[in-house]
Amino acid sequence: MTKIVVAVKYVPDATADRNFSADNTVDREGVDGLLSELDEYAVEQALQVVEAGDGEVTVLTVGPEDAADAVRKALQMGADAGVHVQDDAIHGSDAFATSLILAKAIEKLEYDLVFFGMASTDGGLGVVPTLVAERLGLPAVTFASEITVDGDTVKIRRDGDVATQEIEASGKLVVSVTDQTGEARYPSFKGIMAAKKKPVEEWTLEDIGVDASSVGLDNAWTKVESYEPRPPRTAGEIVTDEGDGGAKLVEFLAAKKFV
Amino acid sequence: MTEVLVLIDAPDGKVTKPSLELLTIARRIGEPSAVVFGAADTDTLKQYGAEKIYTYDDSVYADFLVGPKAEALAQLVSETSPAAVLVGASTEGKEISARVALKTESGWISDAVDVQADGDTVTTTQSVFAGNFTVKSQVTKGAPIITVKPNSTTPEAADGAGTVEAKTAEISDAAKTAKVTSTKVKEASGRPELTEAAIVVSGGRGTGGDFTEVEAFADSLGAAVGASRAAVDSGWYPHSFQVGQTGKTVSPQLYVANGISGAIQHRAGMQTSKTIIAINKDDEAPIFELVDFGVVGDLKAVLPQATDEVKKRKG
Ligand SMILES: Cc1cc2nc3c(=O)[nH]c(=O)nc-3n(C[C@H](O)[C@H](O)[C@H](O)COP(=O)(O)OP(=O)(O)OC[C@H]3O[C@@H](n4cnc5c(N)ncnc54)[C@H](O)[C@@H]3O)c2cc1C
Ligand SMILES: Cc1cc2nc3c(=O)[nH]c(=O)nc-3n(C[C@H](O)[C@H](O)[C@H](O)COP(=O)(O)OP(=O)(O)OC[C@H]3O[C@@H](n4cnc5c(N)ncnc54)[C@H](O)[C@@H]3O)c2cc1C
Image (cartoon, rainbow over all chains, first blue to last red):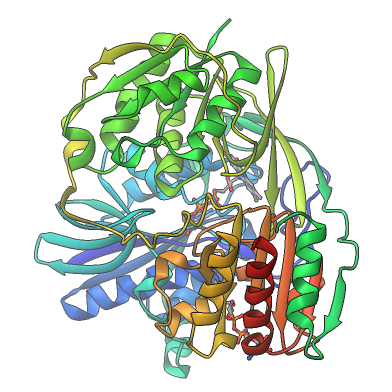
């Protein structure tokens, strides 16, 4: 019986125009949101571990009302239950406050393993998993590209910057999962129907014992001073190859002193 | 002047170019102190302005993941109260530094492309949302702990005292879990390292699986080779060369995209390149929205000609 909690984030659609709000935080209202694509791989791996043996997958999200959509998508894929932590005080939290909320919520759940995506598709920092592990006092194996669970032992292949590593751990563990682990499944019609009956708990900060003064924009350890859209690129020169495309390209390179 | 701790990356003892950039940036803020796990060429560190060099020599740093390094660095931060801590924006650098920030309750800023100091205030520039916005940030608590992207500045030599101080740290049992049972270093290609290279020449699905022309052009320019995810997923090039959201982020002086359409996830990894060139046979490929120079044509014809032309000019 392996109990897995998967943390999933609700993010603005990356293919839509993303923007900032007046308080320099990400505008999560003006654009459609969805389950961060990279978290689908984490949900998939959790489902596969449970399907190979026996267990339960609970998905956990921290975010505004609409973030429930991310939980629903994971339930449709096959997760068993959901938890949504929502509280007005959370708005504008940095990675550290987010990791605190996630860690406190995870402590309230029964679990053996905690899965994360390798990075969100909005902030994209990729450090929330390691910070949650630090807070829970657990080992973190990040950027896992292959995961096998055998009883109490978890074997992981990890794709680092310069090396591929094999890692072995036992006991409670935090894992972040890359998109190298294999395609995530699409929800089936049956999955979509079944998801409607699955339990989703709504928790506030009080429910998990987090004080509002340790989260949110005013208590963030970093602040965005200003933001600016990138100046539109001046239209580049585009030529059609008529047998001289390569030569023209090198002329450009020479003019720019690359050759 | 206050110390600025710089975490040095030195595979096989050789200090990387991004680490020299960090030493250069550190001098804007205070006195650079290099922090080295394992061996590093201390002469180079000294020549690039390191006043102090803290060295940690223990197998614990290689046998386990980031835990021990983060504990050692956090202890050094508490001991030295630095004006800032600078770390390379690699996956490992981010994890170590974020943990140090949590342990020392300091604000942490990731993926800076510029760092400037005005008195005691350190301001960073980040490029976010696939390069569509430029953001200026500061920390509001503790010493700024900042990860900086490669190619954010040009390394400048400066004479440092280079005083070496061997250090030891208290490593908890908790940091010694999740043992690394084997490590396979990725094969060197003989080309410059992708994230550090001044020029990157990439190939995508449009190569049809044959990277010969892409590699030949890269070699004529002394460039690194990159690949799109479509090329990597097809097994045409190893994953460690993937450029993009789930691959490497590059910001070279010159990026050449060959047979790559320019999907948002690919752009996320290359959009901060200074000059962008694309060769694509579809004149409506989104990559052309980004380019300084584009050739609408078949890469199989354009690249070999360009390679010959570069070789001719170089004599
Ligand atoms: C453009 C941009 C730049 C930023 N820069 C900084 C910075 O430099 N320093 C800083 O401290 N903060 C920064 N932030 C804020 C930070 O991104 C948010 O605080 C965020 O909540 C956590 O970081 P992330 O989205 O990057 O997560 P990542 O660390 O990239 O996410 C990894 C995984 O953690 C899980 N996860 C993350 N957030 C949640 C959630 N809310 N609910 C459930 N699971 C979750 C998911 O599994 C996800 O795949 C930035 C935000 C943006 C949008
Ligand atoms: C969660 C997620 C993460 C992702 N991360 C990444 C990432 O990190 N990096 C990445 O690259 N992608 C990533 N992707 C995939 C991305 O969305 C695109 O699918 C991918 O970038 C497409 O690769 P491509 O441009 O090589 O192929 P295509 O989009 O198929 O484009 C091929 C191009 O080649 C041109 N072409 C064909 N033949 C020739 C020829 N003979 N000469 C010249 N041009 C020719 C075509 O006109 C076309 O424009 C990610 C996707 C998801 C969902």
